Length: 157
Image (cartoon, rainbow, N blue to C red):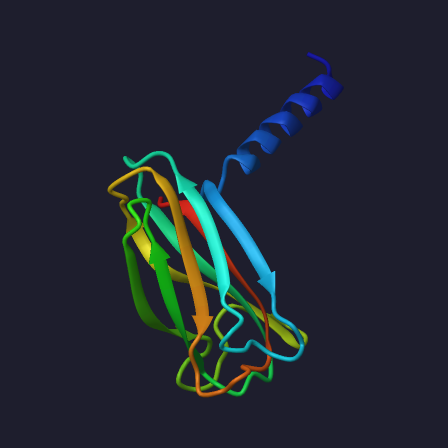
């Protein structure tokens, strides 16, 4: 085999190796938050289909905020609707920094991004369409310095 052929085969194997790494994403969507802030009435809706109930899934909330965000955390309300029509709601505190004010996630310049697991190894009773609505639930209305919020549903590893 010639040297150039070996390089092509090696490059193809590396591409295959790197493309197969990481979790399998079932659903991904992101919303940009207006500069005026995230108001109580600005709920974010995500909807996705679960086809394989034999697998476990992780929900990851991706949050981007300014590096000068004034709080260590903020609260959200999650409303889940199941294929059966049943609904559930819960309140969560999203921790953006530790007790010493050190940001979690990646901060570059004036922006920080963080992927927060909000549900791990979830098993679904039935296949079908699920929806998740996220509302900001803090004392600040509107909540400033949050620039985007996204949801990823991935196959748990």
